[in-house]
Length: 636
Figure 1 (tube, rainbow, N blue to C red):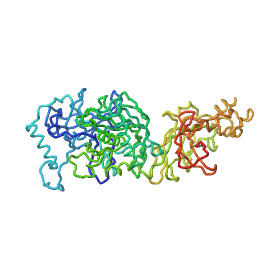
Figure 2 (figure 1 turned 60 degrees about the vertical axis):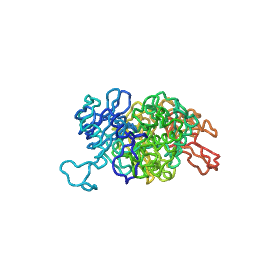
Figure 3 (figure 1 turned 90 degrees about the vertical axis):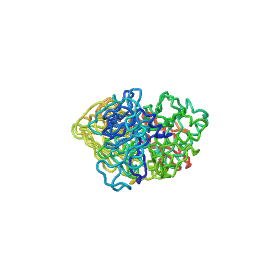
Figure 4 (figure 1 turned 135 degrees about the vertical axis):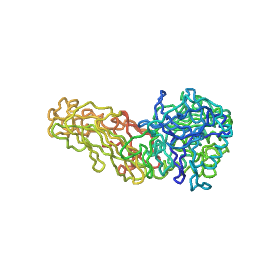
């Protein structure tokens, strides 16, 4: 599925984005295609192929054949789509809507499946004239297409000698319509973009909400002829600088890496952007295509309709989990032409960031659209990575410069259960849903879709409490995994924007029979550390005692995940340098890094850190104030 264009709301119609290319003329387009036809989109299904990637199979009823032998309905297969909560976009994949009439220039892969020869330009949407269209009158039967489209169809009939011109035999790709349209079809046209992505939602990277850069890798195992490594680095640098100069986006170079596969086929959802300055792996298979870009995304079906990538000014976004840009290095247009390389990298990175084309009309009479960097045809006029008037406000719809969305984190709860009544101890079976925003300190929180029969959630202010429904016991789930005894979702809002979705999981149900009423500490933990489940047995074993003399009570040690009999296990900074701070952490607990110049007024340096191991680490110190003191705080 192609990433949604964040187009200006005044633009009409559905524009699926494609690639930066040199568009074939009508004669060449007709001559190169295996088959050419006019048809109506009937339906679509999305599936995972044997390679692990997502594809969409679209069925088109053939209404008129110009070239080749075609069945009554033909199936087209393109990379991308949504399958469950995982999605992929691919800039060379057309976005089809049920009932649309399309002019198709088809090519065949080695496995026999069909695709649009040059991507979206080879799947041109046709529009019929109406009574309000200039020059349109009353007709009997279907209305004619708009004049330019009718002229194109007339030209194709001439090329076909008023009959199906000899071409490929595609009758083996006959298809019946699926029962319903898949989520990939354009079914929801919001005011943000004028067309949809994955059934209606655009996508974005969320690192800027944390004040963090998007890490990127460059694969330059081979470069275009006449392009030096220094020129290649500069082309990438210029491309990324163009987007960061007009938005909240920032980028961090993670190194040069030979990926070994196409950047589009790297499945790792690590939030990275991979820029591949070659196509050694033959990912690009459309003539005249100079580059392709896209991304992997995550989705979550909640009753609220929240987007995993947050909400910006009223528009929900999916979260981009990986992005890619691939350059067709063998195209002679790149030879000794670093300016074109910079333009194409910038364009394809735009796709990876969630943008579509400004237009796929050629020639485009609107100069704002035609001169946009995201216009579907390469300009190749020496502009390099220079954005047009159109591009900055579009990228800022996803990544505003002055008001980024808040940040919410995934959290876990270890729950204590009691045979008589649920524990009523502050801090037990509850967490603080603390949110962070780079601009506004005032945030509100809301929850959605609680699930699980083991108890109920309740929210008071920003404190979320879980009340178990009975006396339970069970194994503790991996805090970094997906399993839970109960779960609920939440997010924060600053009044304009909302964070991505945070998930709260109950990962353990721990019985406590000693004492009555419950002191909040499970029997197993009490017995592990003090040799007896009863806190009244032994010395300094009660919740309010401090057995190891580290200043923390046994109850606080339980809540922090530290050892109550080992003073060195407490939360403490273990390493500090001008470049990095490390501390002893409990995996998947939330920590704040704060700084001060006077030990009175403290500033949070980072939204928060959620370590995946027993070592927390922070390396993004700010230099805008002479901070002398630092501390790490556990978020309850």
